[in-house]
Image (cartoon, rainbow, N blue to C red; front, side, top):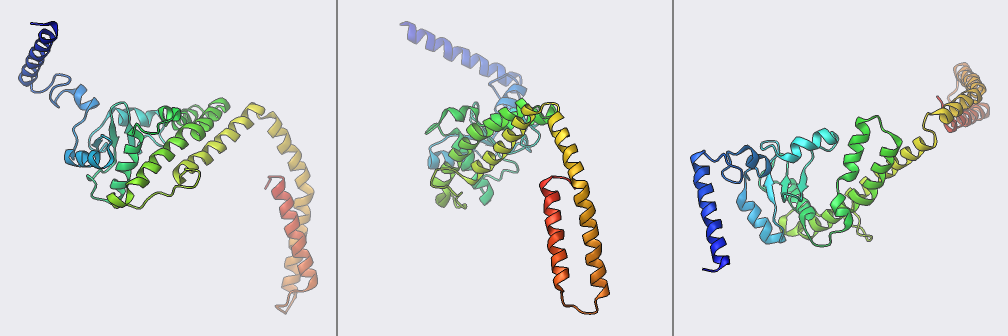
Length: 287
C-alpha cells in the first residue's frame, strides 16, 4: 500500500469515527450536525437551499443565504457593536461566503432578488480590487468615530475609507446586480459612464463630509479659532440685527397704515433692504 492510499484510508476512518461520535452526541460536535453551537454560529442553516443552487447556476457565484432576524450569525453579533448605523443592514461575508438578508423570503420579492444578486456581487471573485478587501472599513471607522466622540483623525480616516474603499466596492456590487436584473426580474440599478452607482456616490458624499469635518477638527483641535470667529461675527451681527428690526417695524407700520393692497415704492425699498440684512446675517452664520 502506498502512502497516499494509507493516508486516504486513515482520513476516511477518522471521518467515520467523528460522524459516529457526532450522531451519538446528537449533532453537537463542531463540523458535525447543526446542534453544535460553533457550527450554528459559523455556518447557520439555510432556509432556502434550492434558491442558493439556482442563484449559483445563474450568476456563477456561490453564497449561503440566511435571514439574520431569525438565524443569528457572527456578523449580526459583532457588527451592531462596531457600527450601530449599519450593523443591522443586509450583508455579504466573504470569509464564510454568507449573505444575510433581513426578512429573507427566498427570492419571492423584488427587494430580495435585487439584494441577493447585489450581495453576491461582493462575493464575486472577478474584477476584485484592493478596495474589495476593505469594503466596510469606512463604515466601521465611522461607527468607531461616533462611539468615541468623533475624533478628527478617526473622522478623516473614515471619510477617506468611505470614498476609496466602501464606495468603489458598492459600485462593483451594483454593476454585478445590473447584469442579472432582467433575468431575476428586479429594477436594475443605475450605472453611470464612469462605472459608478448611486449607492457608491452616496458613500462618496458622506466620505467627503467626514473628511472635511476631520480636517477642520485637525486645523482647530480645541475650537479656539472657531470660537474666536464666532465671537467676532456676533459683534458684527449686532448692528445688522438692530437695523433689520427697525426696518421690519417700519414695514409693518406702513402696511397697517395703508387702506390699499397696492405695494408702494417705499415698501419695496424697505423689503429689499430687509432681505439684504438677512443675507448678511446668514453669511456670518449667526442667528
